[in-house]
Image (cartoon, rainbow, N blue to C red):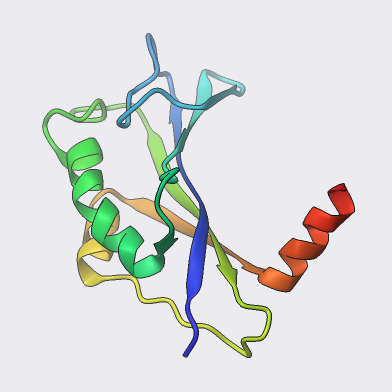
Length: 138
């Protein structure tokens, strides 16, 4: 069975009524969008710059981090009574020659995501298609 590589990892926090500096989860957001009625979206790029990730590595690396960043008493969201939504947007690249691929999300990672009420949004990209997009940009 073939696996997939993680090529993008963005944590999105949508919140209504947030005042003051953006929450650090763990750093400042890379992008902020402001909507109607005091709605804001904060985007955090979590993709490590120096390490290639597969889904298993992502689960190991981020389960404990999400516990600290989101669920701990020290989290900027601790005690937050404002309505908010968390989503982890993940891009997976799989081999163009694969008929299928498999990803395994660890129970510990899924437990933390569930406790944080975090949505998991996974987009799949075929390597062959990605190379064609890169070629079109040239």
